[in-house]
Image (cartoon, rainbow, N blue to C red; front, side, top):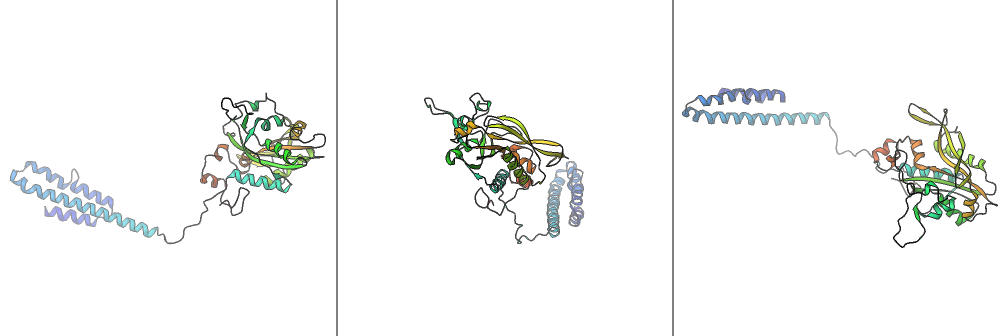
Length: 357
């Protein structure tokens, strides 16, 4: 018994690592270990011999198990100390600074757009997001049978029974702001109207709430040539590409006549979009000369004044410039997503108010 104690207690004390310790455990107290085999011999002993040997074997087993546990803890402590020496870190040093605040891509792009048009003499006009049916449709020469006025495309405000006020909607575009601006200031006028708009749609490139900026310029002699120059200058500045080429395609919008869809020359190389080069064209906005009926609805005499209007999706512009594939990501992502696309805290005041950080 003493020989077994000395043999295993000494071997446990000299064990160099946990695998060696586990091997000793199996040799001593495992199912086929020496101490375990001796305990099986108790069944063949006389009662007097069992009474003497049983307590001794149990005490030996407990002593070996205790030595194994102590040695295992000592090895773990030694391994931790070695790791701490190898991975030493002075926790008293100040941490690396990392700004937590960040401007949202839609806010940043809105600021970029506003600054570009401000350089061309456009001021910012605002209006309510809940609009009357008249401002959102009628004043813009959109007839009652137009698809945009149907429930599948427009959010209509509910009315209690007996409430006969004119219909109100969540505005489907920022064009009503143009009507309000002309009613307030008359002509000449040069404004942009950025803001939230709402439509019943949801997929990779559509969301129920999104952002638009619409532009309006009214004067005595404003023409489509002026519209073309403004849009080309905007695209050059926004996409930071000098060689911008736009293509105007005849189209139809109720609030402009003539109307044109505007495409920009681009190319797709290795899955990335390049603006201003290549053989492809991509539609980016709608535009045209303001319809005389729209001018009349806003209190501007169409026989004396004329001008152009255009509408651009702010979210789409952000997707194009910064390579963001899914419009829905603007509304359900966190700071890690923003940093992935290069948006971090800014140290300069923004048009959204104050420091963005």
